[in-house]
Image (cartoon, rainbow over all chains, first blue to last red; front, side):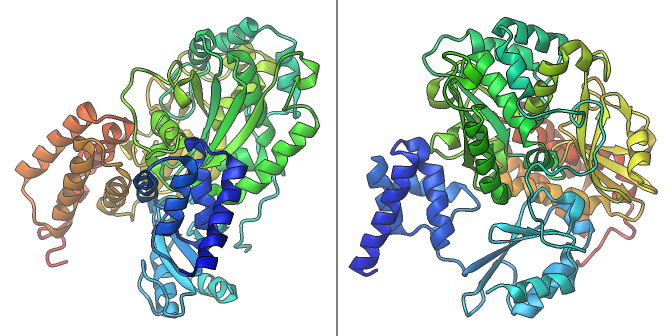
Length: 157
Length: 409
């Protein structure tokens, strides 16, 4: 990481701390902001958060490792999460997943070579009445068919 | 068909229901509550016999009375919007279409228990609701429904903030939720002490389900007796049911407690149902022979998840899906839950492969009962429910899978 990049990230994290406060109870929202922007929380970011909240970096790491939506390794530019719960499963989740896997040429859990997509399973997305459902980043899509799902991915930049 | 779920906050679909979906105008409950004394609000709640809608069913009036009675400089009210139970989506509908009920209920709660801050713990999966809800709170501030001296009530300052979860089912458990709010891993605490005296940041805290708060808004305006008119003696009022699976009209339904399973199935157009999973993955699987049982705390208590399976569904596959979920979501803190769920899943896989003995399966059922007793929180205490109830109620289907099951797969 270049020094200028480090400085920029430090400044960014400082702005989150300003917004949410420097109490430990602000940690989850700060991590959420970093995750959203960078799609992962790097070691340096963890150290900066720890420094600003005055806790040990391992405390930050332990929280990241607990939550499914926080990660320390970079993922693709777009995160696709497909609901794997039984309601969506019964409505044809498997076919949707297979279509996406074929189209992107990866298996679920993997990232495309161009780093554009990471595809994962998620537990219940709370869209059971409109399954199969998937989330692309923070937007959700429902009533999917294999064809529709692939079409939606094609529209993503 | 529109695939993108767009959010227009407050825009209501045509929903009908006796209580939650009945007429309500934003701010009504706050206005009414501020003209009442705190004790009177608690009496109304007591009359309503409202119980927590998250599933555990603790009387709301008692929870608020204890939090109100706790002596502390600061208190909190938390809205638990971390509905992660598979098959549940009523809170999404409430927050999207009826945010006024939920937020007004929180303000009433803040006034009643003497809290200055309300926190909505919104599950990470509902991130798309964060911005619209924050905008809505901003409007409430403009109208003085939040902020200082709310609606001119001298000394009543209250505000609401939203914190986003990050994909952990266990954080729906109130002490795990508080842990994660405090910036720790979302691992449940030992109870007691309960949040009502040692909650968020060690202060008295009332954690209430989204639907409970929505019900409070109606109760304050229309009275506890009005609310208790609906439902049964032990389960007053109505309940939102999130219906999914094999039926013609899935969605959220408001029905009075005491409704029979068969009545609900008819309403949603479920033909050929052979089983209904009530209460989500951690709930119970009801076979056709028990469809005349009633949805109520005294018979089948539930947080409202109803998943319907028709004649063609493989119940072992359903069970496997649930057990995979629990293995995934166990926080790993206590041994019965961390290891128990893995063992139960292994058992399901053995049956799937036709490579099991009844002696072993019976041992696993015993293990399940041990987990129910020995696990630290509700997750491990209830995760054996589907294992025990599905294997019991569908043993003919599951153990007669023909020729030793699916050998070789």
